[in-house]
Length: 324
Image 1 (cartoon, helix red, strand yellow):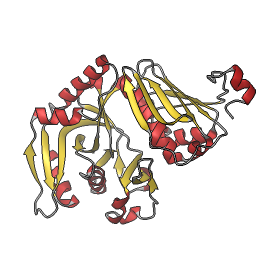
Image 2 (image 1 turned 90 degrees about the vertical axis):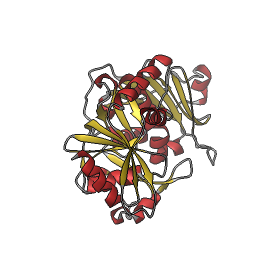
Image 3 (image 1 turned 45 degrees about the vertical axis):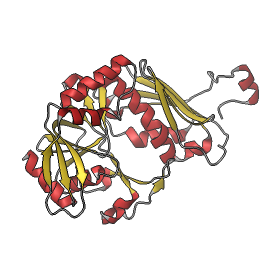
């Protein structure tokens, strides 16, 4: 329980809420100290980040999460993210929301017990975005891309929703590549655009991927707050190799065209590549946004190409030929 009616009157902002579950995790290598009054939140956070080692020697980020004994009025609206300057909010309703201060590395969130008990909802809609925003503000520039590596050379797979980034990354991992990330990868800003940190411990598919990969059919899809059916799988359950860190070699934009007989590459201009990468990842105050833009520009010293493909096997062979 967050607070009784009496204590709410004397502490309307709930500063004195006792958050007795305290623990530290290392998402993408950054220490994050989490305090909560709910073992459900602790279990969700440990499920997301317990496999990550500490990589950065920097002060920890803080996240405080309070869970009430109330239940939310159903149905809840989809989460709405908004940001200005160094502040970002994610709000579903007055009882279920999160806030992050990117400059100071501190966030807090408040949930009703039913939302806290829905692990996909609390993880996908709140814990992941809040923590990743704060971690990235300190160290990274984010790219909305899958990432795979072969022989120490990493390829970022970029494209619009439905281009097949995650499925192609997984198909490559089944063929001997290492999976770095299924949907988002981070450029280490201090590395001049080449060093990457991924999220290799879980991979998230659209529900339709079950018909491409029979081993996924035992995993039940879950509907997100935005109405999409997704499957999330622990990569330890899959017969693939993974890598947390990688060195960028190529940036590849995917263009799926059913029916073509041969996968092929064409050059993408710096201007087009930069505009496409920039449109979905920049946030924070202008100093941080400028640092992110600089990292994207440095990343694009790697060759930027368009891969036109029809089937996953042909695309994997084309990518293999590119890096080998």
